[in-house]
Length: 319
Image (spheres, rainbow, N blue to C red):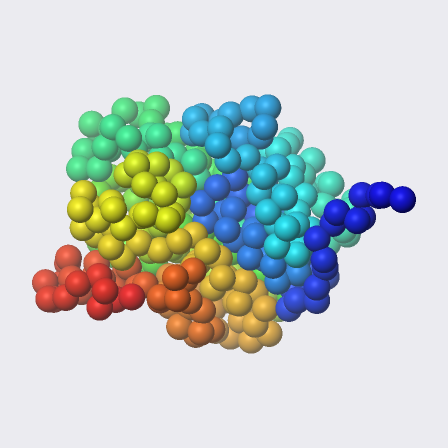
């Protein structure tokens, strides 16, 4: 007799089996890949976002949904659970945390990958003075990149500290060292530096609970949106290099995700990472992780030493 269990993917024991994770902002890009890799390591992963099969967020992409992300998590060997959530809506976030508490009693890993503000950058706010940037756009950038993170952290941390080893991951753009230079627009600069300080501050607060807070960043990310922008796919992404030479250092979303999954499974992660910010390449070196093509791209070093430092070399020298 046929039943639903006949069609379930085979479960396996992984380094995160039994762990409960929430990836806030898992519709696409790094968030989706992070959810999938945590699932591949055995975790139960709650995935949230604003785009579902019935509703499209202000990002305007219907091609990726949180339901699909949850299915990918389960297909990878974990358990994916999709919960539509706008993380600027405090009541929705409280309901999300309440559901996790009711179903799991605790939370072990919180990944704050909330953003969705690329459409606000399309008119190229970069290079504009703060007073030249439309105020509504600037404040929305701060809502999406800072306020959403704080709401989620404030409401989920009381559940996270029930874990025997709480892990809070802030996903941003740049490390503290890389972001010592101005990021081209005040609102964007604030939005991408705030998660670094959130991780630093939470590192102080979580230490007494045996916890770890870390800010992580991809390099030049080959997200679905970036591939679409250049009119290429993951299979022929190198065709975009002629248009944008720096795209030669691009990395897949899986690179950061594999690195973070390895970090999450590290029993010594607090000593290594608590309160710090790190790139995908930095974490990958520690855990021996590689991208899907077997390379280990280091986009921040490529930009730091080449574009800003004037060092001769090509992207291949940093892969």
